[in-house]
Length: 385
Image (cartoon, rainbow, N blue to C red; front, side, top):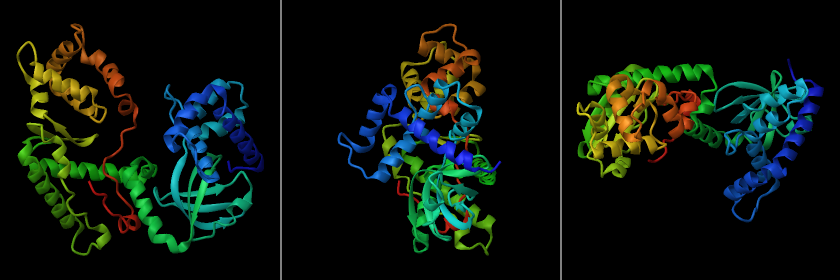
């Protein structure tokens, strides 16, 4: 149902209760640590910055136990009225975005989030006067949370005039590119992302002959640059001669980041169907650990496997791949690495990955390719790497 006056009033009370809880002694240490991380030892901030800080701290910051302040509040208040609990539970899914104001609708605004291209009907629990400065065709940077079938402004808002359109679109494009989970709130964008990733993987296999390739470090930059040019040529051919500039692919990105891997004898490039393309240092040594027919992997192989396991940047997908393709080798390697003769990947593998890569194991799989809307694509500038 749409948000009524009572829900708006209750949301204001509940926000105050949540803020009091965030400032309680039980959370003093976590709050102090986050304040210092955000502002330094001495907090120098204006009112808007502090409002935004506390809103993010309550709704999005993860405490040491993995819960947000909001989730902990809900767990510790089991006797909340059903209506209040429903409101607060909705706030577990805030939306951060850059919104274009489309029109006024009574005491609400109809806005389009430029990041996810979805339309929202938004209210303010501080009263409709808060929305008055937000004119149609202007822009608002804000966090919003669900309230019935509508949405509620949360935290601080930054407003931009119609004349700032180009600047706002550039910022929205960068947000969508750097934080794709925000763009993928739109089911159509998510569908298109998976479609593009499948297409790109097919091109990778066509170019390299497999979804896995092992390259010497010296040749890796050249081969990857050739592949990028192949991608671009295929995309241009697919778009056709009438495609406008917003449809045309970017120029090849620099591969200078491979310099960070200069100590690796080999570079592995694996294009997983769900996880996308990953680049791995010393991949041949890693692979040999699982394919080695001997009773034990070498010390060098175990060292590389351990480094993959301990590196939070390396996806769990590479271990799932090894377990699927080399099940016996996978059990043998981890029995040796862990000193656990009874280790079995089938029964123990997920727990091992959760211990070392919990955030990635728990994350909802998303495409690595972000399809920008035509409007955002026309204003997107690829970041330097």
